Each structure stands twice: as structure tokens, then as C-alpha cells.
Image (cartoon, rainbow, N blue to C red; front, side, top):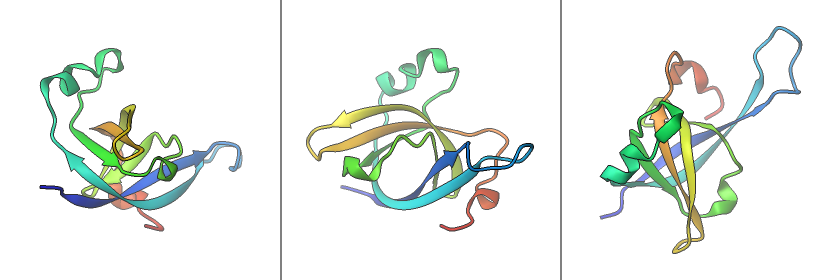
Length: 110
């Protein structure tokens, strides 16, 4: 059974800020599908030092533009890896909870 969820992709524009301030972020809400983790997903994080906590499918790859952070289930996550999903022309993201950031602080326009 498919479980669809809304996620918020967070893109940063490092050039669009003043010196000494945080980069400006742009948030885009898209619909995604939760996927089951398997042993390969957990061990594949490899050299990142992060453990995959969830795997989600964005069905249409044009919705994903290389964002490295997102909000999923009210928590902020980092993207560990991105893989194509040819059945849907989509992408699969393996993600891990981001340390030190609150999703409530991050959600401004979502």
C-alpha cells in the first residue's frame, strides 16, 4: 500500500545574503511516497557518517532540483543519497535526521 506524504524541499541560495547572516532558503512543498528501508539502505550511507532513517520517492524528477535538506513528518532531514527511479521517472532520496535544527524554525513558507 502506498503512503503519500507532503514534504518540504529546502534549497539554499548562498549568494543571496549579506555577510554574516545565514543563507537565504527557498522552500517548496511536494508530494512524495514513503518507501520501506532494507539492510542495503542502512549500510549504503557509507562514508557520510550518517545512518539512513527513511527513504522517500519523489515520483516526478522535475520536482527535485538537487536540494540537500527537507522537512518530512515535521522533522528536518539531510539528503544522504539520490537515486533514479525509472518506473516513475522519479528519484529516491535516502535521508537522515539533521542535528541541531528544528523543523519548526525552518518552516516559514510551507
